[in-house]
Image (cartoon, rainbow, N blue to C red; front, side, top):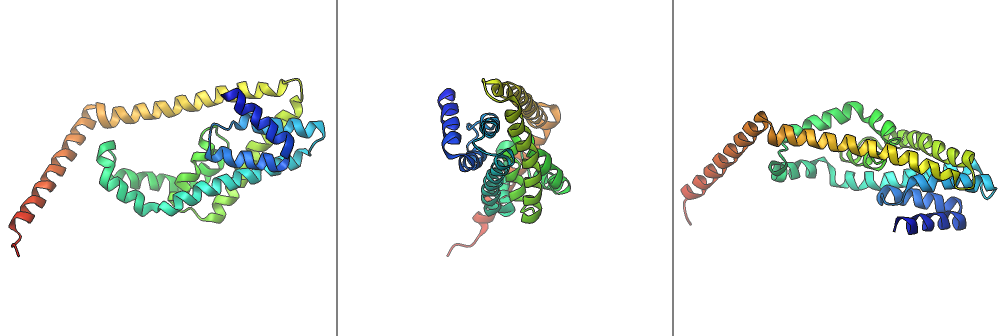
Length: 235
């Protein structure tokens, strides 16, 4: 299936040029199975053949990056911090998340929003996801756009330029091997963070104590609500 997808990506770029690159990069933000490590280097190959210019391919890829990022930002901004907070209040206990946890995460992102967006656009897998917290926090759109453009330009220039330099004879596919290693490193980091979270919230002695305290508090609140209902005069 991946081979078919790769062949389709190459065919789209061959036929549509700049438009194909912009479209594929925008879709890659929303549909991660579309491999940017194929799209961008092959765009460089097409430029080397003379079917497009190198700067043109970089600009097309950056336009696609910004469009895809704006879609995710818009969806998250439409949900907004209020709905996110309501979700945590209602369902957070199942994930051992509290409003305090959410507020700490929000403060962390607010302090580092610019760095998160700029650097995040240059990290495999994280590139698309960084638009979501920016949208939830309704980061100023101008700031979000500016740093999305800069980060995307860095990423796109590197991969499109690498494809241009390596050229034909499938040498450009070496980039895919390098990016696979980078993605595995990112996945390992994410899994490590999840493991730490599970240990801290579910398995550690402190986590079990906090969980029991939350359960006791929820039970006490439910008992208070039941008593309030029972003591209300019937009409």
